Image 1 (tube, rainbow, N blue to C red):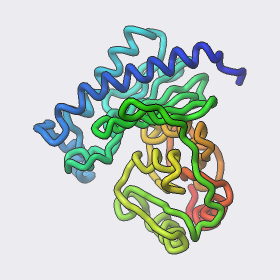
Image 2 (spheres, rainbow, N blue to C red):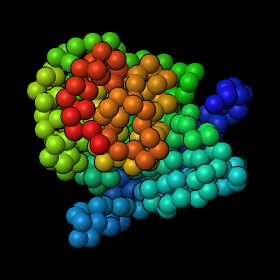
Image 3 (cartoon, rainbow, N blue to C red):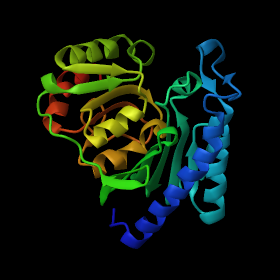
Length: 271
């Protein structure tokens, strides 16, 4: 892959901020309000979607179509449009809908951009807290409450010192995966549950050390990859390989030594 033009990257970075602003305008009036909850899970179990999810994705797609009509889009709510294009936006308008409907400010808006199949730009936004985490190969930064600060993961070479997270070990892991998570959790200093993609941002910000997830879709993780890598972190599958375009089993970590220690357990349940 040849290098991405820096001027083009700056242009797309500015557009990413505009996309997040449009998404926030669609989402925030519905948070802790009448959000139009629908259960799309059926017999498979509870799978909530709200008007915030759908309205934010519509707003993002409309801006992309207007500004970059040749770009593709992959979104959780409205599917694929030119997924093989040179540039493809990958969207999860409200990651953590369960937190959203519970009134917890742990949901995020995830917007990522692929170039020639590789994640090159991404953002994790929590607009209720006025936090926007943006990353690319040139670095990562937090834009919050009128200030911009660089993001950098923290050193944590030992799993015994690590703060780790996963969303829901009972609902997201199968039996073997749950055993692997339990082993890693027993070795870590502290574990937090239910933070969804906000935990990704905390690894990039250097307040947490690792997030372990399984069963992810592309829109659950691709936006976070440039943020973590721009902050000096790593994103791999449970075998330590690059994450594929379909998501799956994923580990986000701030320190390679800590990651390698966790992978000893995770590789046994890798798919």
